[in-house]
Structures are given as C-alpha cells and as structure tokens.
Image 1 (cartoon, rainbow, N blue to C red):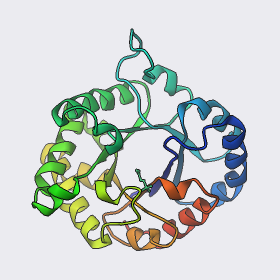
Image 2 (cartoon, rainbow, N blue to C red; image 1 turned 90 degrees about the vertical axis):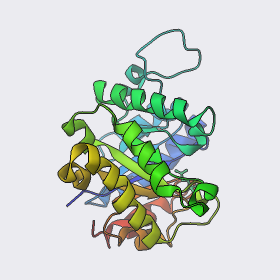
Image 3 (tube, helix red, strand yellow; image 1 turned 90 degrees about the horizontal axis):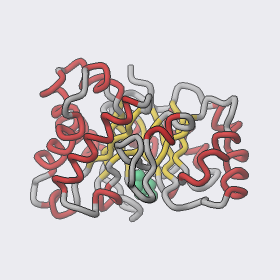
Length: 258
Ligand code: PGA
C-alpha cells in the first residue's frame, strides 16, 4: 500500500508574509488532523521560512517549487538545495510551467541533475511529467512521457528511485478547469510512468513509487481520481489557495485504493 500524498503548489501566489502565515494558520489544524496522507504545502521561496514556523509541530511538510542543482556558485537569482534542505522535505522539479522555457532535451538533462541534487541534500523530488495537447492528439503520450520519466530517473539507485514522487500532469489540464478523465490518467500512470520505471528498476520499484495526478484537481473531482488504483495523490494548484484545500484532502484520502 502506497501512502497517498497531496501537495498544494501555491505557484506565484500568497506571497506576502502576513497573508501566507494567516492562511497556513487557518488550515494547519484541520489539515493536520487528516490521517493516512502526506500533506505538503509548496509556497513561494520568500515565505518558506514564515510558513515553516506556522506549521511547526504538525505533520504537514513543506516543499519548494524548484531549485538549482548546484550547491553554490555564480547563479544570480537561483536557489540551491542547501538553501532548501533545512526548511523543506520536498522539491517540485520539472513543472511544465518551467519546462516551457528551453529545449526539452536541456530541460530533461537539468531535471535529472536536480533529482540527484535533491537526494544528496535529503530532499524528496516531486518530478513533473506530462504531454501537451498536440502530443496527446498525435498519439505521442506514451513515448514522450516515458522518455521524460527515464531521463529524470537516470542514474538513481534503487532506494532513491523508490522514494521519488512523480506528478503526471497533462499540460492542457493545468489551470484550465479541464481535467483528464480519471481512467485516462490511470492508464497513462500505470502503463507509461510505472512502465518506464519498471524498465530500468524493475516492477517492485515501479509499484513502490508514488504517482500523483495534477491538472485542475478540485474539491469536487479529487475523489474520482483517488479511486483509481494507479493514482496516489494529487498536485494541486489553484484549488490549494483556498481553505477548501482541507476538504479536498479529506475527500481525497477517503476513497484511496492505490
Ligand atoms: P492547477 O495546477 O491545479 O491549477 O491546474 C496544477 C499544477 O500546475 O501543478
């Protein structure tokens, strides 16, 4: 049985310290009381410290939204794994909103460096993969997403591979109100995401990795995704910015079968 994991990706929202602290205080107790699910908040960098303080002594953990792979250096504006390691358990890597810049090949290669850097510094990566609408309609999902997974996992040890979290997000479903059908998501996660992991690391590892669905997940549709046997949670954007996120997590965990 894989422990489900639901993460709220605040993106570039709730960025004022006062606002972030007040929101975190509002949701922390009811969120903390929901058992059987890993609950993760991924606020902007500038409020990580404040949110970390607000959720102290709870089971809620923090994630960052990206990072550089190097520990330090002349990289103006970048955040290194060392800067995150004292605050965060998780780091989202390769979100499609970040992969959109630069060529895919470069992105895959740097995402792999970041995955390795995450493990070096005690962070668990949430690796985002997913096809765009054109690729989906052209029947390229399996090849494209499989290649993203293989590239991200390249060179990991078996133990590291098992600890990775993957977020399968169809790009046109992000922030648009359109979600994949749960059965589609289930099929791609099972055949393509776990399939690619199994090729390199074997079936046992593929079955141990937790795979989230992401893309317009909300309080009304979360349960339908969580009833799918391959879906182990959700990466939630817009719907994680409201107190309703607590209800989303509650509804998500109750039908979980993965
Ligand atoms: P959304 O974002 O829930 O607002 O669609 C999901 C994501 O980008 O991770």
